[in-house]
Length: 287
Image (tube, rainbow, N blue to C red; front, side, top):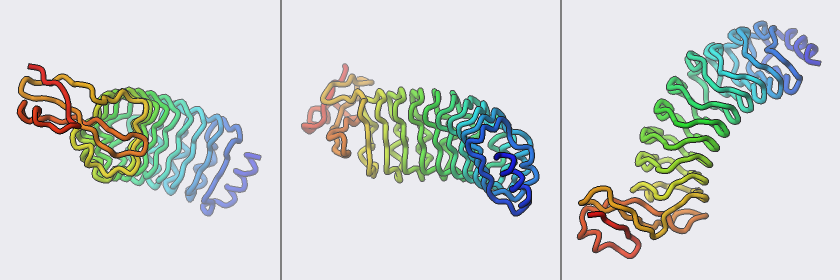
């Protein structure tokens, strides 16, 4: 069946636009791909392909590539030749690294799906994906977010659920077009102040982390959906002041469907202000 499909595609030559070999138990990239330079969509998901070969480098008109659920261990350098590619699906592999030049030619890439892999880091070179709008790296082993990712100025949706993230870089404030941020089930303890600068953010999910309070200015976000179940939020519990002349406090803020009160960190200018606080502001200043 696989051979028949390839023969049919080859007969079409440059006129062949779509090749779908989904779930055919293929163990390597078809060597005949270099004879299909006009190909727009290549679907090879649900196979047993361990490596992307050089034959893919001729597919300069390819727009959609699906290699999901295979046996790939890296994002190969050959990807740089796919200069027209807009959607790249690599979910469900064993990917643990990027080849050094893999991102170089993907200037038109809009969507990158790396869910269910074994990535522990993302290279700074990801910042070269200038057109990227949707990035999903759920169910990996990421311990940090590279600052370079925060300079993807067109990024609208970022999914980093089920990783091992401890913090989010302050540079996230540069993702001005970000509308959806999902950080479910990580190890995040503190959200950066820069998060409050995301004026277009509409959906935020931080459920299942270790967050206790939210940064000052958080209440100004124009969120439509906000989820934070499973965090150890402070609710009318004192916080030690960091400096003698400053007092950190907590303010309760109504915003979301699933949480009535959100504790916010606020820096009060003096003990006088602290003593004149309203009923929803409380804390302890350490002398």
